[in-house]
Image (cartoon, rainbow, N blue to C red; front, side, top):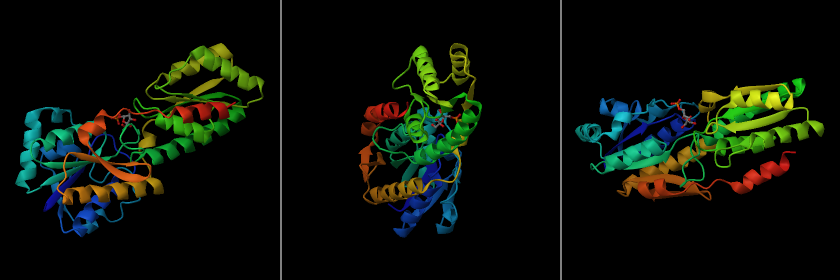
Amino acid sequence: MKKIAVLTSGGDAPGMNAAIRAVVRMALHNGLEVMGVQRGYAGLVNGELFKMDRSSVSDIIQRGGTILRTARCLEFKQEETRIKAANILKAYGVDALVVIGGDGSFMGAKLLSKLGVKTIGLPGTIDNDLAYTDYTIGFDTALNTALDAINKLRDTSTSHERVSVVEIMGRDCGDLALYAGIAGGAESIIVPEKGYDKDDLCRVILEGKANGKMHNLVLVAEGIGGSNELAKYIESVTGIETRATILGHIQRGGSPTASDRVLASRLGARAVELLMEEKTCRVVGIRNNEVVDDDIDEALAMERKFDDKLYEIAKALSY
Ligand code: F6P
């Protein structure tokens, strides 16, 4: 192993820069050369590679987004595109690629490894939707961003004695909504893993009002969606003024939390160690606070377990 490359792919996540920094610096520390790839797989296919040194990653650990930029590259599903990418890496003398992204990006890494490029994946997504790792890089920061917004919405909801429906990102995964809900003291948490009954929700809201609640926070995961319509429905059934707020991409930005920076540094360093051991087609994650690595196929086949216990606790604490 002499030369590695690193790219970020899919939706960006706070902490990606800390992961890039860890990969670059750990590789250089071990005498490897490093190339950065701009714009994910799309940039790789266009040959957007550049040499990185220690100063290339100076002053980025605290920055949101990704200095390498990112893209979703649908063309990478085609074998001819992947062959082109593998040839470009060979032409640059790159033996291995570290991919920071989510499940789609890992699939790309796996297919690329079949063409002789060693690949290691790092979980960079705010969604926390990868079963093999307890936490993904970016989840904690996005959670705290959502929490900050919820705290503010609680102020204005209380002043106006309104219901506030807040839609939280996470594609098909309810983790961000669940954790933000429990941390923000939401009255109701609606996630795709559990579903919900609209009239039951209205009943809970009316009970809360009867018990003297000054506001009612309803968190809706993106996978459920329809927050504006839900707000109208709640208002029509309960007679309580209701407003919907879709937090959207604000959750993807911002300076990463300490927890995300530490996670990114640990996982990034392990990715390089694995490459030094000539390992390939693996993803690095964290389980029970231990850094782990799994075969990409096995990791992607693992079934994600929703935290039912936490969901029940949130319910018990909410009224
Ligand atoms: O995967 C991260 C994520 O932010 C999801 O929560 C969301 O569904 C999706 O990306 C949005 O993608 P885009 O930035 O392409 O609109």
